[in-house]
Length: 254
Image 1 (cartoon, rainbow, N blue to C red):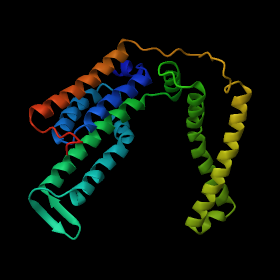
Image 2: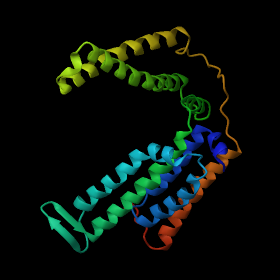
Image 3: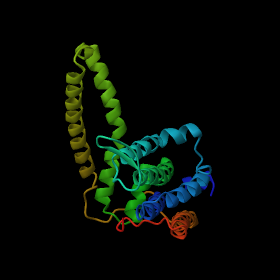
Image 4: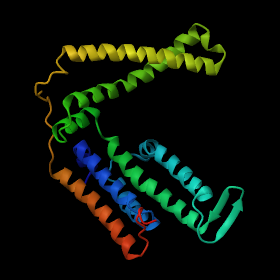
């Protein structure tokens, strides 16, 4: 599947593929299944059409969260097996090391493909898919889309408020006080803008109970089926290898 083909996949399908991988990997806590899934996913990352810079920027939250989550479990995880180091509440044991490694790989295996898949998702296409394919209420979907579209405006408003306050000399002292005042100002501005947007959408019939039409039809095709099959194949391979090697640890079974 080429980069152009991935971009044409329905956003709902991308959400479903990420969900399949997530469900399969949260059923067990072992490093083997996560490693198999991560290796197979890494091969597909090359066909996502992302540059190395874009890839690392988009996945940076996952790359930062994974080691910190693993470090917490390494130092304070449930102790089991031989102890390697102990100081106050810190107790590094064989079990905590294995758990930390499993969680580190699992966060990467779940977070990286989700981040890569949603890089090419357009909010409008996602709203079309949720309303037409998943059959979610149109009012809920369009309201969420309108709110998402305002995120960029909020960032611009924050910069404008900071520049305006600096021009008036308000931002010269007291960073904490300045931050609190700016947050309150942005909150007031957001409420006003949200009220105006809600009134405008209501006036244009967005709140009507009548079945609405859509400017763009959201469909599922062969590319969508291929992506779902790839997700199922990766999940099945990870579970199969984990069970075959005796490393399967079902979360309910400890």
